Amino acid sequence: MADRLKQIALHTMGSIAPQASSLGSIIKELTLEEKVSLLAGKDFWTTNAVPRLGVPSLKVSDGPNGARGEAFKGGVKSACFPACVSLAATFDKGLARHIGKALAEETRTKGATVLLGPTVCPHRDPRGGRNFESFSEDPLLAGELAAEYINGLQAEGVGATIKHYAANESETKRFTIDAEVSARALREIYLKPFEIAVKKSDPWALMTSYNLVNGTHADSNEFLIRKVLREEWGFKGLIMSDWGGVNSTAESLNAGHDLEMPGPASWRTVAKVAEAIKKGKLTEATLNGRVKKVLELLERTGKFDDPTIPEEKAVDKASHRELIRRAGAEGMVLLKNEAMFCLSGWISSSRWLWLAYPKNSLGMAEALPP
Image (cartoon, rainbow, N blue to C red; front, side, top):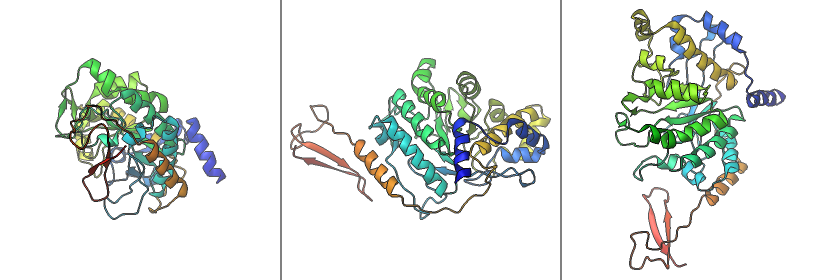
């Protein structure tokens, strides 16, 4: 326990071991093949290891309102917290931090040390299929709550992955859509929640989106990654792709994109990287910079100290049940219809409209007397 508390304290202070000089030594010892292997996943949820140099593997788990683990169906059970849109309705930053701490515990029960969340893309269209997963149409509210969620999560030594960067507000044709956004709208709406969270919570990882932004895929968008994220905001964490969201080899690496997920690699194979270097499109120095970010994330999550990946387990904690109930209750919103909604007849302003989504149902609406 004492060692664990010491490790958490080091994470909280931002200290990581081995130190940067040790990272440099590791990078010098890596072969080209080993460097390339570290820049893409091993499988769906883990990264590659380099056992001869003591470089461990990292496991991630999907979020953002729980830690699902590896299975999409029928896997080890997990706690399901209220979605971020419900959390935003509480306007409670302290609650967001408490949920982040609880999610760190949940993530560790799935053998992972990085959670793929939170999602902070603003709600721009009511038809957005994943609006519930993000916080709000208000970039300020989304950024502030995301920062506290991240601070709570990372205080327990589990890394956050803020996503999906950027302008990923449409699920329709999300793999190919080009989000054409003016400079002002991009800065004031679409990037603002990311900016707030990066500056106030230092997320250890960020996930790029599938879409193009003003003609360039997010994973190879130098303006978004290098100029805005790295240079302007000072982001120090790792940048990973959404699953299958890398679209090039040299362009993506040169833009500052660190990790292709999932594995095995599609674009970051030894053959493709070696060819890019041979043609002068990529340098090994650039590879070293990307590898360093992978190693830094391994440090921050304590994987050099404990390289094991435990078996997944379900841990039903009373404190988590209580927190889920509290967050759900505080996120309820009562709306009064004063000729705002297109409702008539027996559903009127003198009645309440109850909206619910029971299990195995698309939803229901019921008018209740006031």
